[in-house]
Length: 423
Image (tube, rainbow, N blue to C red; front, side):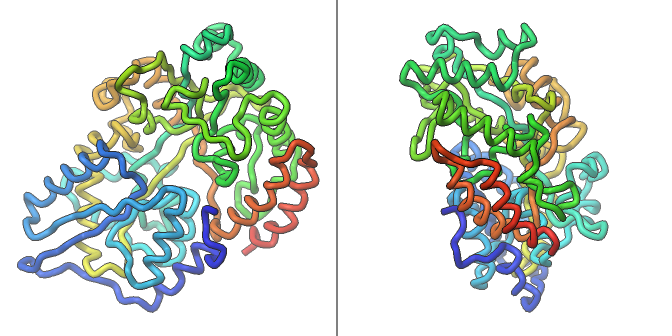
């Protein structure tokens, strides 16, 4: 279960912060130990983070930074539990899905003044579209350090062995559609390998299906977040398509099946481009990276965001904000962009991205990364997301069965989460 049943919502867990005192800057002679929670334990990521911390220490010799890796699947629950228990980190990565809760709850220290005061920071080059979810009353409460498009990683070897067209061939022929993508995945699945894996979904984190249902123009709620739209025709059509791909065509691994694309066991996987670091370095297969297939609503792109924020309740909030300013300045943002694409306009060009992403071709960078960031919608989020996520997840269990009544299930979901939309 992604979220503990006792956690009613992220917002509820954060509400107690109103009674906690704001921490200030420690005196220069005192040792300051900053702790940041992250959801990555990737060695390459940690190596870069530690290099950035060492760079900050050169001008702040009394400040040390340590990174605490929390499990991806239970990250938000673990973070809010730390906060509620009086053990808040100084800084934390935050999912885009729970951004509204953190920003509106008062859990985060305002960053705007510190970022603007940092020499050469140039906050103005980060567009309002990238910062919207992290801003309240004109103040930025977390910096979107990662604005990463979702795309399809492809195993060309498995697809060719199954006698199917590769996505690149379909793109060249104007045939890269969801119908054709699933047919290709089904062909590979018949060979005993996995077809298409929606990474991190695992029949629990349903929000990752946004990478599919956006192709139908579907959304779980209205643009203003006040109305449930899961029972509308676009969502019913999209989930019926996914259901058919799982149970009739066997193109998507079913519930309880674990298939790892990066181990060479699936034809395709939908995930963010930052996962390129998982591609095998030994005995690699022939791989490609392509945009999401065209759906009935046309071409589309999806962005996942991650923000880094400073906790109001931390003992050294001002120093932590200074570190965030250093970590996300233009120079370090360029370094981070090899894993976490930046929202800075100066870094969104093929020449720079090619230097920091040597695995990707010029065409992949332009058509997947740059185009995806420029045109993509951000993953859906909402206040009280933890409660909504769990409610939708438990009801969707009825969809992940061979004989499912998709429209009826979606009507039931809207009946349950509809009242939460109006809060």
